[in-house]
Length: 458
Ligand code: ADP
Image 1 (cartoon, helix red, strand yellow):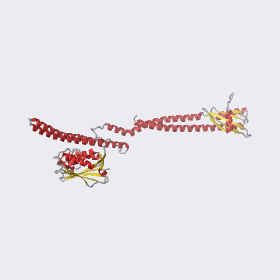
Image 2: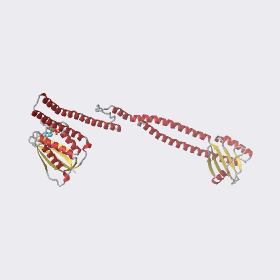
Image 3: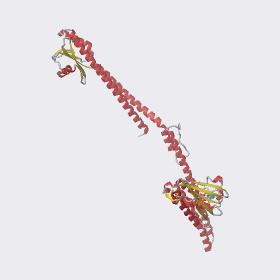
């Protein structure tokens, strides 16, 4: 069911309940008022009859006169009957002529006890009153009639209320649908706009209308989500094109090496040399693919989230060993600025494999980009963080490029003569992000660079 219809129905149900309660209240108040008024009239009429009977001497002729007067004066009450009983419960007067007159003795008894009694059935209302004349003789006067006019009026009120209810509900349904439709119109528009947005036109944005209400907030949030999606799509696109470019170059080199080798007959030694060169190139390719894999893995948060207390100094010694075992001419020293009193100061909540990737990258870069192939690592800490500084005396990084070196595939201009693909630092930054830390660099062209990694310790 559409929200519009739902709102209209809910709205109509509420209004219907209010109208029903209101109509019932009006109807029952009117009915009570009518009944009370009619009882009063019946009572007055009974008393009037008794008064007249007292003043006239009760002869049959007078009674007839009174009957006629009753008919003409009070006839409006319709089907009226006035009966008068003496203290022996004998009927002394009846406002109508009939072969036999029925009355209820227990009712007479109640009137004598209570002096005034009102009673009613479906059609009729009756009052019974005790009347005492100056000779102290008591009479029971019973007046009974059907309030035809009163009931007609009530019927009228009921019809008016039912008609008003039907008109009111019809109007509510129509207005409910119109208003709900109008209030939900912006959502319908947003819906339509969203259907037109695909991966190819993420630049398209939703109309935020008055920029104030909840729907505008929704549109704004959606637009922000589109921006994020666009950025991540762009990143992915550039990653794929950069990665394929990086892979194509060494693959093309491999291909041409093989082609040249196959052009002429070669000696066994020459073939061996070609194969050795191919092996080196393949190793570089493997390195590159590993780098790409690390980058992809570091983007996948869940894979990298196995964090546990890990000693930073131990990881640094491992990285030092790893790099130095692969490159005999590299020299790396790892030192504490001051020895920690508490092991926790150098223990971080981290993933050992990922942190090892960070430090091997930094140490490898430091040695790779310096003539002396030397790197110096210093570990320090404060109340909250553990800080690792990797320093080299290498080629340095141009100031204008300092902010770009953490982007995937970015290489500085002065690094073109050195092996590498510009992947390592972007992987490092992502991993340090996962560890809620930061990585910063300070550098001077021709003098060297210092990379500083700060991670919160336990
Ligand atoms: P790679 O070293 O494989 O090119 P990285 O992502 O590790 O890729 O580094 C990105 C770029 O940052 C490098 O190409 C280089 O230009 C620069 N760079 C990184 N570390 C250093 C360093 N210690 N000294 C000078 N330049 C560096």
